[in-house]
Every structure is written in C-alpha cells, then in structure tokens.
Image 1 (cartoon, rainbow, N blue to C red):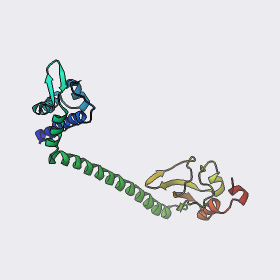
Image 2 (spheres, helix red, strand yellow; image 1 turned 45 degrees about the horizontal axis):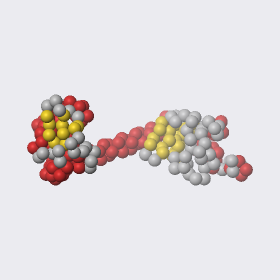
Image 3 (tube, helix red, strand yellow; image 1 turned 90 degrees about the vertical axis):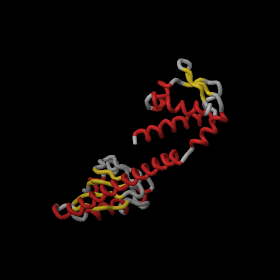
Length: 215
C-alpha cells in the first residue's frame, strides 16, 4: 500500500513539473532547483524527487546531472509525458480528494445542526425548571433597530430581556453580549419574565415614534 501511495506522489510531482514546462513557467535550457530544494518545495523525501525526475528523464523531458542541477530539454516531450501519464489512477486521486472535501463539508453542516438542536432542547427543558421563559424571535425588515447594537438601544433597560443566543444563516452564536448587532433574517433567543415576548416585540417593532424611526 505504501509503495502504491508513494508512486502516486512522485508521478504527480513529475506531472506538475511537466505542466510548468508546457505553460512556460519553466523554460527550455533553464536549470531548475536540485533534488533537495524540490524535496523541500513539495514536502517529500529526496528519493521521491529522484523517482519523479527519473520519469521525466526517461521521456527526455529533462536532464539531470549530479552537481549541475536539472535542465529543461523539451516542451513537446513534456506534452507527451502529460498525455501518457494522465491516467485513471491520477484522475481518481483528484476525484477522491473532492469527495473527501464534500464529506468534510457535510460533517460540518451536521455539527452545526446538532449544536442548534442542543440549543432548542435546552430551551424546551429550561422552560420547565425556571420561572423565566426562553423565546425565539425572527428579526425582519420591519424591525426599528436594524444595524444597531444591543447596548446602543438600551435593550435590557427597555425590555428586561437578555439575548442568550442568535442564529444568522447557518452560524449559531451563544451569549453574544451587548455588542450584538440586529440584522435582517437573524433569529434571536432571549430570556425574561412574564410577557417578555410582548415587551421585546413591541420595543423592536411598534413603540418608536414616527420621527425616531427616520433616524
């Protein structure tokens, strides 16, 4: 298994060097870095670089001389090398990497959902063991305080409610603090005594005089 993985690595390095020759990043008669420098660049062993260069030498893409570096010989040879080695194994490696990234994204999405479910579960249980109430409220375009922070509008003084969390798209923030800024589409979770929903809703949507709404 290890030799197979190593083979994929040195072949991909050889393909990368050949591609740089074809696109002109590396030019004919130009000498490129020695094996040790390339090994550091690709984060592999010098032996892996030696095998990659040997593949290119076999098709006269480059010439390697000990102590003199690696010389670029032919663009057409580099093109032929790419065509010959652009095989199923190489493409499968790329495809496998894409699938891994998709799987990581799915795991992240699942983790976000799990944490949000925990918040909802906490809210449900909290209602049964405390005289306070935890409530959700969506912020929409009709909100009078869009773009303003909690401390800026004296939210607690006006409503006696405390925001304990909010959701913005897929992002969930616990204990956002007084610097939380109200945004269209947010869902805020707050805690307070009886009638706290009416207090918060009326404060955010109904209680500003018309002249203050224009500010």
